[in-house]
Image (cartoon, rainbow, N blue to C red; front, side):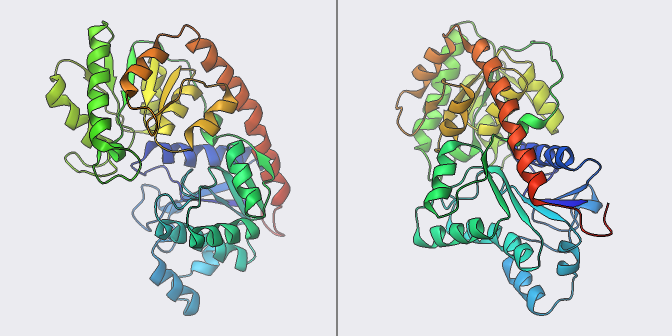
Length: 376
């Protein structure tokens, strides 16, 4: 059995996407023991593991189209060598909130897999929102051609049903499939500040307000005698702007003072899970910073910028989410959540519920893919 996980891989700068790659691979091996699982993000030939690199960039549409019309690089042979494609869409990109172009790009390879007879399993992910006519048309096509679809929250399941394709199961994020070794609690508040939201061009929240509230929160925590660790969860180059959490960290330090806070520098997925596992609580604007923490048993206060947060976290019993879109004084709201005495209980409940929900993904994947004749 050969399984291809797309739109997630172990060397991407977004540690949440790395978690998706690792979790999806575990789900695949639980469904099919001894499966040969490969991952592919977008590029070709640049990964740390050449065995996981396909023949070409699956997100660059013009050469992809040319390869379909005039095959030269072996795309069809490579893709049809797999028994099933596990489509992660990077967890939250099956939507048009990041632009229709991104949705088009990520829909191309699953469409080719369907045309060439390889079943596509849409792994647990956020489905929607789709705000444009073109986005809804693309989404309806992807859902209709998928052999099976798992949502990671009930609202996503509703969105799929409205597009004419009820999901096969409502599960949860595959990050909960990862091993969770015990880590000593040596840190206090670990704060993930998002470079995406720090960027003034972001379409999700008011960046100026987000910056001000993030600094206000840290200062208030320090005034309370709390120890604060800043944690980047999307690792771009130092000094670069955009979707890069170092931009936010480096933007905060001059205002706080270099010695006021610790800065954690994860080099890998294992590193970041050790860091969040060592925290008394994680406050995160990246959803996977929060999910990694919950998976390690650490309480969280998510700072949500889209509808992907609440619908996923609420079924797990997490009620601490602060919605940045509707909460002007988010620093005060976060502090109020940190004062709660039930945070540890909530984290334990979330982990138990996630384990129960994740089994559904394995069952659905197993039901739609059978080894082809002559394969393992």
